[in-house]
Length: 151
Ligand code: HEM
Image (cartoon, rainbow, N blue to C red; front, side):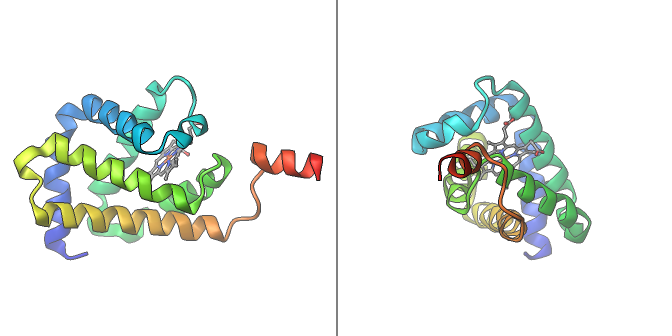
C-alpha cells in the first residue's frame, strides 16, 4: 500500500465514523443477504458485535501507516476467528459487504482510487488473519467436537 492509499482510507473512514451505527446495520444486512449461511456463526443479538467491529476497524485504520504495530493484534484476531467457525472462504463475502457498505456511506466520495485503497486494506488485513489462522491448531469448534464425538 502506498502512503497515498493509507491516507485515502484514513480520510474516507473519518467520513463514515459519524454514521457508524447506520453503516454497521447496512453491513450486516448486506452480509446476510449475500451470504445467509454466515448468520448462524453470529449471536442472535448483534449489538455488541457491531460495536466491536467498528472499534477494530477504527484501530486498524488509525494505525495503517504503522502496520507492523498492529500486526500481532491482527494475527491474534485471525486465530480467534478459527474458534468462531470462520474459514478462508468466508472472507470474500465479508469483504464484498464491507466495500458495498462504504459505497453506500460515502456516495460520490467512494471514487475508484478510494475503492482500490479499501480493497487493498481489506485484502491485507484478511490475508494476515487467514495466514495466522492457517498456522493455528485445529479449533475446538462445535463442528470439530461433533466430528470427534461421532467419528
Ligand atoms: C478484516 C476482517 C475482520 C475483522 C476486522 C473482524 C473483526 C472482528 C472483531 C473485532 C470481533 C470481536 C471478537 C474478537 O475480537 O475476537 C469479531 C468477531 C467475530 N467475527 Fe469477525 N472480523 C473479520 C472477519 C470476519 C469474517 C470473514 C467472518 C466470517 C463470517 C467473521 C465472523 C465473526 C464472528 C462469527 C465473530 C464472533 C461473534 C460472537 O460470537 O460474538 N469475521 N470479528
